[in-house]
Length: 242
Image: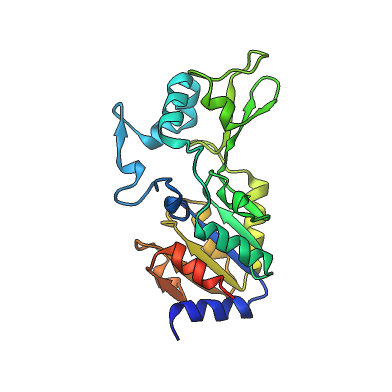
């Protein structure tokens, strides 16, 4: 039995299936990944690493430069869902997938139709005024120069988890609950090196199956019940076919 047939069989058998995804899920949508050998984090800008420029400290100390960098490198307003996003939405609609847990901030899972999406790192289409709390979208930020301001005078902050900031503990707790009860966890497009998200794999119960779909090796490869190196968009699209 090939790996697609195996995955489809496990999806049919499992009563609790969870998907955990990272930047690799959105590369086919034109959004570059981060931690591969050719990812964004391997590059530097203005003598600083991309991680430094996406840190809470840099946002506070160099807000205008932070936003200039964000608009130039991190925001992709024209990006649209790819076959992987649509496949996951299809699996959810068929009752074969309980939740999508994502490290991505692009909102493409929801655009594809997924309803139960846990965005552990936030969403790049949401910005809030640090003074009055009013919410804004990416279009507003893209149209403003430098640090975008609210009419009240407050500086907007992206509703994303910057480096140096903690994850939303309530949301992380929900992700842990899904992982702990999962009979099948499909992990795709992530290097599984960023914690605490990578640690979700460790919450799988004995007997639960782990499927890893990733181009590059991960620290959890030896834990996988099924390891797939093929293109994840094709694998997920085939797995969702009836």
